Image 1: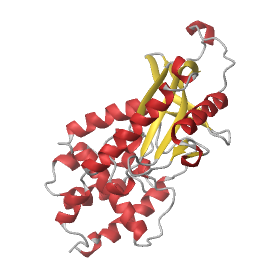
Image 2: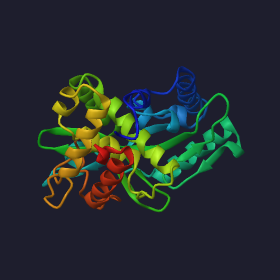
Image 3: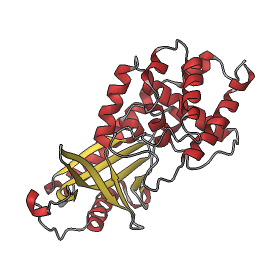
Length: 297
């Protein structure tokens, strides 16, 4: 018999409680207030939206924090089609730097929450949690336009304090996740929560797993599982079992995962110097399988 019951899996697939959801929503509201109250930022065109597990409704009780993207539209990064120049699209040079923008946001957050509650990090600015809000990672970004022959994909780009450039497509991620969820009887997001909850349990139980196995990676892996695995199995035990088998078989030496993408479907999952490898994933799936006790059947 597996180490965990169907009842346990059924409880793990659920989202945070109403109280936690209220604190998450309050965190977003307070950050919006901080921007609107700042005399410099409130004159700028800034899209403010949640991203990550909260926005994608895949967060679990053990990681109820929130990521908030502050995407500036007044200054645009871009990737052009071959043979095109920035002038073909009306882009002009800007003197406003990303570092200035991030520092202005940091100052606005300090005025709102206080110096002791705000910590600048490499990729974000963190607002510490309290009784009314959760830990909040605020990510300053510039709008990013990726021009293709079929049109333009709008994303976000930021530069870390260590000068690493990061491009992401959080809004496409959200929409594609909703579509996948509707195609799988709402089981995509619930299965993602299961994968995340198991990872936290393994860490709590001192299982030595690679730090490259992130919550984001797990969501992307679950997204690449065919819909029939969600739809043709009636229990969470069977969905988990068959999901692990599929992912394991497609991350082995045959390299059947080379075309897998992030949930946004705009970035490859295993290309471009990612922190994780398919070998990391394959090893982790063996650990997960053994931890769940599926080898006992």
